[in-house]
Image (cartoon, rainbow, N blue to C red; front, side, top):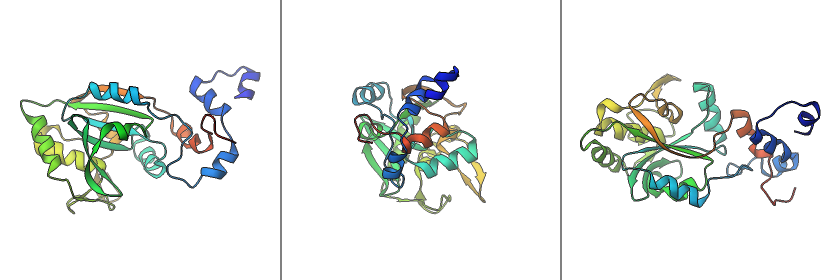
Amino acid sequence: GRLAGIVGIPMRSDLVETASRFHIETLNAHGAEMDYTGHACIQKADAQAFIAKLQPGDVILTGDERSTPFMTVTQLVTHRSDFTHAILYQGEGKTIEAKMENGVREGELESVLLGKQHAVAIRPDYQDDQAGKVIEAGRELLGKKYDFKFKQGNDSYYCSEAVNAAVKKGAPELGFRERHFLGREITIPNDMLYTDKGRVAAEVGMGRSYLDCLMGKYISRDGEKK
C-alpha cells in the first residue's frame, strides 16, 4: 500500500485497507484456523435490515473467506468465489441449511449472517403456492446427514444440494444449474446467483476478490495486538 502510494499506482479502497493491516505475525498466529478472518463481518443492524426484505422460499447465498477449501474449489470450477454456502429461508428469521457438523437443520438467519462477509437473497420465480411447497420439501430433509461425498442419491446433502433438492421438488421448473465435476453432478452455491429463473431480492455486506479473501489470514482485526 505504501509503495503504491509512493509511485502513484491507484488502488481500490478496500485493497488499500487490506494492505495497511497486513502482518505476517497474524498469519503465524491464525494460519491454521478455519474460523479466523481479519475482514469485518456483517453487522447486526445490517443483518436485520436484510432479513426484513426477505420472503419465505428465498435462497440465501453467503460468502465466507474463512471457508478456504470451499472457496478455492469454487474458484477453480467457476472462476469466481463470491459465495460458498446456500440456505433456504423459511420466514420469521428461520432457515433450513446443511452444515458439516450436524447435517440438515433449522437455524436462525441473523446468527448465520453475523459470521459472514457478504450475502444475497435469490428469489426464484415462484407461482401460486410454490414457495410453500419448496419450504415443505426442505423440511422433509431435516435430520438428514451431511453429504461429505458430494454425490446425489445417497440420502445425505451438502448445503446447495439440499436447497436445490427442495426447489426441484416444490417448483420443478426452477431448479438450479448442475454441473459435471469429478465424475458426478454437483450444485455449486456460486452458480445459483446466475439463474435466469429468479432475481436478487436483497444484499448485505461486501464481496471480495479471491486473492483478497486469501489475504484475510494475514490481516489483523481492529484493535488486535500484532
